[in-house]
Image 1 (cartoon, protein in one colour):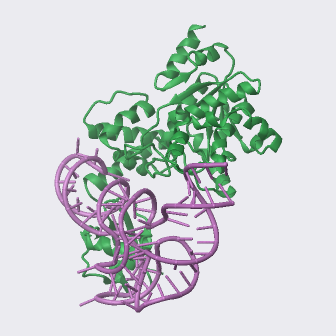
Image 2 (cartoon, protein in one colour):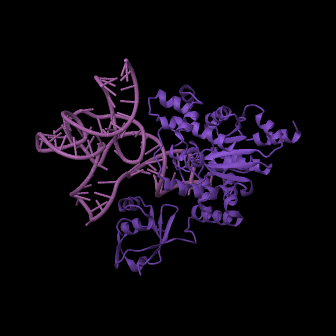
Image 3 (cartoon, protein in one colour):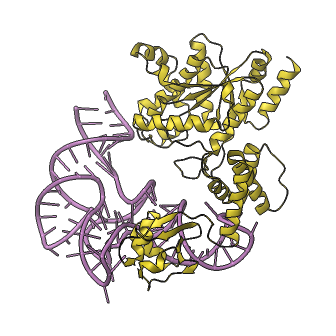
Length: 389
RNA sequence: GGGGGGAUGUCCGAGUGGUUAAAGGAGACGGGCUGUAAACCCGUUGGCUAUGCCUACGCAGGUUCGAAUCCUGCUCCCCCCA
């Protein structure tokens, strides 16, 4: 074993959960050849978020050591739905949605990965196989083995439905490893079972089994559950800088260390919690949008939440026609909420016009008086009103 | 093939003929406070041409003055036996 290989392996493992089998990763690195490091992502939602960024960041490290990343866009497996960590069967997605997501996904992934050392593949290339080939694949595992998996075991015990299709999912993912001849496969800890199964299946197909590497799961901005689009607790890497900044400012204080560990490489975190969080928000906004945008995002945040003023740039909303307009209707139109919601917000003092709270008594207003005014909903939703032309 | 259980609002989950737009919780939103869109406290949470009206408890019918609650058919799900 060369010292470089051992050192690289140590570096790669520093913030990982585990790599199996023991020593396999170092041995692969020791071969000195360009390794094929696989990551599969199902484009069930269009955006890459910080949870993905953790794993993609790890792949980038592999690339920087001269290895090749094989990014598998699971256009085919997305139609099955990964049951990992799920308590229920996923809804089916129409193929057009999957295609669209896949494209956005690829583009966003390159904000982290080095395109020169990345091979992007869609697993529809090989998973759209003949029944005969599926038989061969299906023979490589038993039902008992598949039911070993945590989530299956739990759902089975709780008498919740598990479709045969879902049961098949891990095998399909495993077959990806065969198809691309992966040397290493990366995933979150929730992927451990699938990753390990990849080894068995590769062996069954006469290939050298991959080493696996699992990364911790990044908590979402609720600080509790995993970051995920469907739980709506995510920060997308393609979101505007002010969104990234603001969302990160609301992660609970005690979830901050996880973010620092996994996204900022365990960088030291001096200062009070607010200062730490500001730095976290700034650094990540900067990573995806550059220093200037990050600075502007922070200024905007200060303006909104420290100084309590409207931002400089406010989207416009057109007033309904007529000399007199009904405020709930204006609010509803401008922010895309129902009029009933607008009325409730009014009742709760959540609506301001040019900074002053609006009371329920003033529901019908002259359109002229509203032209150019800034309508505010809560602390952070603003629209500048314009008369209909 | 036989038997049993279930489907409730964004989600989970009460409710078995009448103050039920439907308990409770989660989430979300608003307000207060502040060190942040943290924490904590309070409130709101179907829609609307709004002191009222409309829609809603898997789907379609029916019984009744009145149904989420009873009956019939259908769809889907779960369990047990074979």
